[in-house]
Image (cartoon, rainbow, N blue to C red; front, top):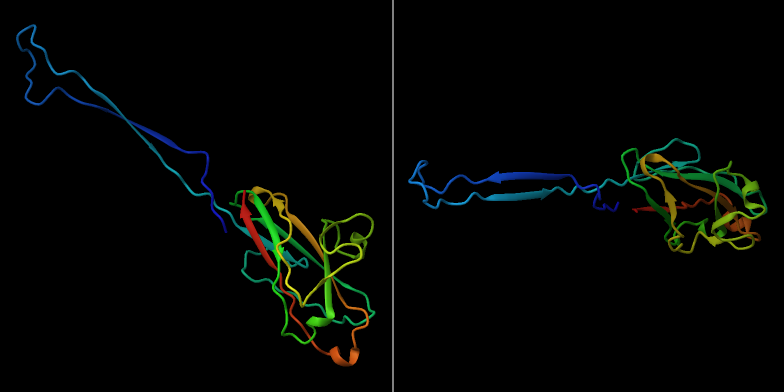
Length: 202
């Protein structure tokens, strides 16, 4: 998480007044010049780093600030219906506003990874195939193209999240098997699809 300086800077002013010069006795002969009074100002500013934190909600499981959040998708197959997973991200209660991005590393080890693809749209509606029709805001892929699980995903465009758990970033992920994938090769295999959510304060 990135911390930024709070612009609301508390200011404390301390006034210090000096007394008469050392050794000076009050009541000296009239006309004797005495040390002048002095007035010094000491200003101190306290800078406090702001707090920024995000929390995620995967597949409606409730918000958590845990480092890793996981879910399970079962029963996908070539030619079958895609699976849909909602991902919501917002700031914590004490956080300033910021932005979030998604990214992922290439999966070149899991046996099912080469057969999987996905698209992601920005939508706060129920995460179903419906939100991919019409003119959705695509975060990854578009109406005809997909991201391969076996390939790395560069950080997506930032989406704003409000301070103190306000306006969230809402993603809908569509995961499916690439058409034509050989069932004999991938049947019963599994893969872990991971996305990294990176937040930055604004």
